[in-house]
Amino acid sequence: MATSWNGLSFIFSKESYMTLILILAVTILWLLWSVSSYFRYRNRLPVPPGNLGFPFIGQTVEFLLANGTTDGIRLWMQNKISKHGPIFKWRFLGYTMVMMDQPEGNKFVLQNEGTSNHIFWPFQICTLLGPESLLIQSGERHKLARLHINRFFDHTAISRYLHGVNLQAIRHFADHWQGKEQLVALDVINLYTLSIICNLLMSLEDGPLMDKFLAEFDIFTKGAFCLPINLPGFQYNKALKARKSLLEMLDGLLEQRRREIAEARVPEASQIDILQKWLTVPDEEGNLLPDSFIKDNLILLLLAGFDTSSRTLAMTIYYIARNPHVYEEIIQEHKSILEEKRTSGKDDRELTTEDICAMKYTWRVLQETLRLQPVLLGGHRKTVRDLEYKGYYIPEGWVLSWNNRDSNYSPKYFKDPLNFDPSRWEERSPPFTYLPFGGGSHICLGYEFAKTAMCTFIHHLVRSYSWSLVNPNYDGPFIRDPIARTLDKTSIIVKQL
Image 1: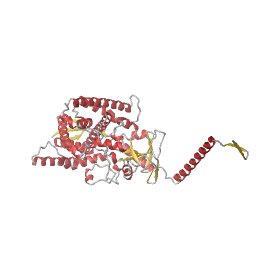
Image 2: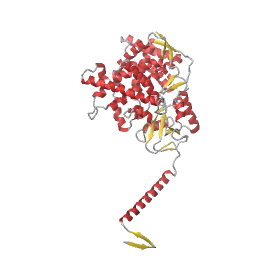
Image 3: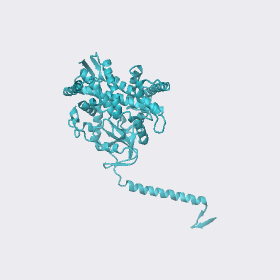
Image 4: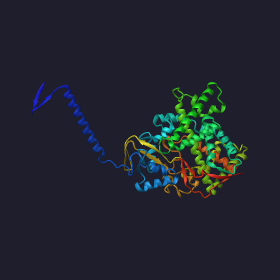
């Protein structure tokens, strides 16, 4: 059927009506979107200032080069802030990043995790840590993963571990310090921190396997913060091979432990370690944890408990040697602890949680080391919706960076910030200016254990040895690979007391 209207002929069929309706619908939707966009963006705030640089690469290379030393990254930050202000955008490995100000920006990012942002790490770190790693989980998966780990690092658990940590420290000084006149402190402290975390996780004692773990972790950590070039000879490629080797070693340990469980011959010491619990205690739904979760999080805990504490202790030894008044005060604190134990008839080689709590000045010294040479320079969260912050518009998908870099060295928050002064920790720092263990839902769950292990080490060090630096005038540079150390890895001259 056809009809004529103004000389035009239309065919009124089902197909014609459907086409007309579709055209009208698309046109209406386009008009609605245009009007909505106009009203949404006509008064839109500007994005943060800054230079994104070349596509994908951006400032990746200059940032990684600056990040190689403590002064380098501090000067990089100061240069960006002088050009753009405390909030600026930049590009790293293809991601558009926004460096937030401190402390307000740190608070904004960390307190809104899970609502307007979620955890973010560059893909090479995610690949190295593994998909089940607690560090890269968010939301409900992160809560569940944290439940499986958190109970091993609460106050009650640390009280149980202290006796073993103390024995490890006594053995460490007998094996690696006694009779020595000169030491590379970082190298020997690596042995202490790795032995403690390996014993806690898997009841692994010193030996060839421990040595192999140490060698592979040294390669692994260096590959986490470098250009992710997976070609032979590049650091990232070496790190991936190190991860593969670590997984193979863990496979062997899991297989051995399962045989011991099946044959009811698990050594008594191993019955309380974390591996034993993960292999035998089901979750809330009655399921045992998968091997992928166990291995990824053993790697995470080994990494967190080994390199971070050893670098902090080595830098602490450096700062104590450079500041005689600090050395004298820390000696007096530990003499007082020993005298109290002897007066009350207690074994002065044992340590209790009360003794650790009494090491207040020791902890202030460690806190000051972590301010000047933080293990964690900052962290990242990816926006899940458009945000407004301090007059700036931040689109969904951009990455927010909270950080310690600027506030730790700011005279606004820390008087004489370049001076090593443990007494500043007699008072609390302003909120969100000092975050050595992170913040938000991803705050380090093992920081109390790390404090216990480091205080225990310093106690046995100062009661039995005095030391001085091989290079007493050394004042930098402090290498970050990726955690701070001196160029000579804190080489010291040792004298047994």
